[in-house]
Image (cartoon, rainbow, N blue to C red; front, side):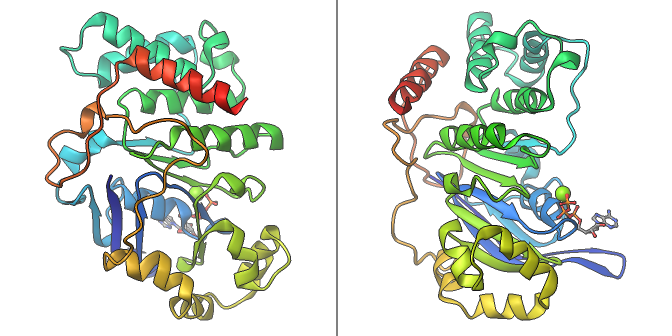
Length: 318
Ligand SMILES: Nc1ncnc2c1ncn2[C@@H]1O[C@H](COP(=O)(O)OP(=O)(O)OP(=O)(O)O)[C@@H](O)[C@H]1O
Ligand SMILES: [Mg+2]
């Protein structure tokens, strides 16, 4: 189990403050949605939290200083950017074979590497499309190929920028449900999204307005907190109200104490949340070795065992 902590994170471009100083703490096992109007700073925050963009302030992951130890830690971070960078003429399977050759340890035995490729294709449910060229996939399927590429290294932190943009509502819900499944107790998944319909799957919603942190807490409490009838109304409120007072209100709220301050102070004694209604057990991340902290280590599963576990999980959920 691990935490991702941001302390007094801020980001400026010239004289313009894009992200006002904010602090956050997420825990493994959580699926987090970063929400806010266009241009509010979601991508800036997402990339700053994983060291792909260097903000002011500090970020700690796995008990280490992420900015200082980025080279050593980056193998444990999967990042799917807003625009994919896949080669259009390769098939799904070939894309993953190439990515596996680049990303998996050079001394990994060939059968193990092949099994890993097969497994991630299954995980993102592209088994039936594996021989199709990337150019002929739908937008949602291409996103899932990008996700599969990141899953190869079994990253304990999985960050995705707008993974559901451009998807129809049914597919969007299915994708969020996939993220729920992928968020095992030893993984933290963070996604930015505009879509409010599938927040049921999410543990924590984080709202940003004009670069200010205005809400962290369960999505189910957000509408009540803002005093609006439903989640979509929050967007209207965020573009209308003064972001500074929203930020101040949040800093004074019990939600801030529970979901930010107490966590950062180490006062949240309840164990990190397990995957909702999941019969799965924690699994080992091969790349998660060498951590300075005393993170719990689960038994390592082979790719075949993991695949079997995943299928069992899907069956259990119908
Ligand atoms: N390198 C940069 N130079 C100048 N301005 C920037 C830079 N990066 C981000 N910004 C500005 O910072 C603000 C936040 O941008 P960001 O991309 O983080 O927003 P976002 O919430 O992800 O938006 P969207 O929902 O449209 O993806 C925007 O006003 C953007 O124009
Ligand atoms: Mg963005």
